[in-house]
Amino acid sequence: MSRVVVDASVVVKWFTREEQRGEALSLRRSHVDGGLTLTAPTLLVYEVVNALRYNPSLTAEDQERAAAALFLMGIEFEPPTPGGMAGAVELADRYDITIYDAAYLSMAIQRDITLVTADVRLAEKAAETGRIVDLASFADG
Image 1 (cartoon, rainbow, N blue to C red):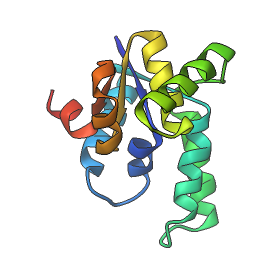
Image 2 (spheres, rainbow, N blue to C red):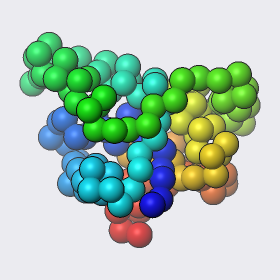
Image 3 (spheres, one colour):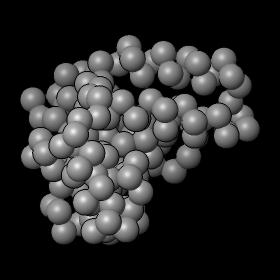
Image 4 (cartoon, rainbow, N blue to C red):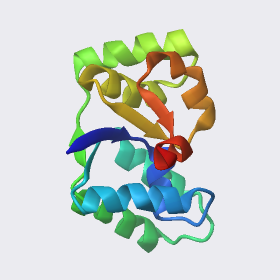
């Protein structure tokens, strides 16, 4: 079974109606069906629920249900580690990206797996790592 790191830009689409929702739901379906394992830093839960908080069509109850669902989906969450954070700092500086984005990328690099993101600009900035792909390309490939 293959494994990928998934970031908040993808997971938010599971709970909202926005571009590439179909691709994001397909990724989730692959995970739930057992064909793919999703992993992420624990940061993902905070980022997703924060993004949902600012969606005017969602209530606090919707946000709470989404947070609970994240834990029920079997995503492998990992806490930060000294090595992961050191890697994130280095990647953030090298590619001029946020520490948040770099945390996902650092996890993918350390585990020698792919980070799937819906953030095309992030995928372009860090393309040379060979460890990041945008959601559309992942869905096509």
